[in-house]
Length: 298
Ligand code: OOG
Ligand code: NI
Image (cartoon, rainbow, N blue to C red; front, side, top):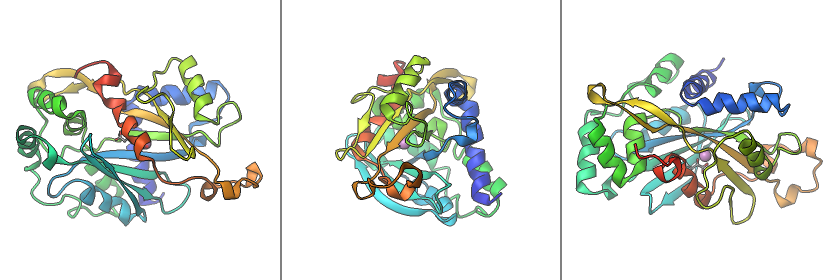
């Protein structure tokens, strides 16, 4: 197995343990005969969240994936949520795309900035620079370890009141935020987001309905939906336990580009479908962990 495969497997296994919906969706897909085994699912992309502070943020985390051959692609800005993001194209089609976002910490109130820095100032140099990126076990450990001390519940609450994204990252750090089922290559009846959403709802999964359950790009080439993040039991400083939003699952339908519309279905590969991301879709998908969707204040 390559280093990248080992790192991705490590991310996916932790994610599956933390997000019961992942295993439940795979099981339901197998029971329904949509796939024969979990490995039949094409992972469209995975996503991380970061804090825009010195030594951390996108510029730090991206070094790992650039080292494995990912290429930095388009930039997206989310003014109201105070986020920036980029997507990264994989070294080959068998790997997922990567979406990394970052909180514009400088745009928060002085009080929120002060709370964030009280944690992130513990990081005094870029931790990725200290890693041997060819050592899969070291990278795996890094992605699942605390870069700063465990937050207090009071700090979490105060941050989340101003930015739910900030609260999510201060506790969850680099845990995978979601993986994404490519639905367009699934059998007919399940190969559109609309049909797949019906299947998910019939199975009892709750979908993010911010801006509607189907998020559609203006050119109608990229359609996305996502589950609402389930609550996880979080242990804060001093052993205080509270339920907060964990991670979620996303579904993507990338339509065939007009210039390839004549191709037979069997000849259609990734390069024939739309690429990249859509800011308006993403803006709503972020809310899959927000209390407006989970219905619970952390
Ligand atoms: C990412 C939300 C955006 C997409 O595919 O556009 C996204 C997040 O919740 O961190 O995943
Ligand atoms: Ni996504």
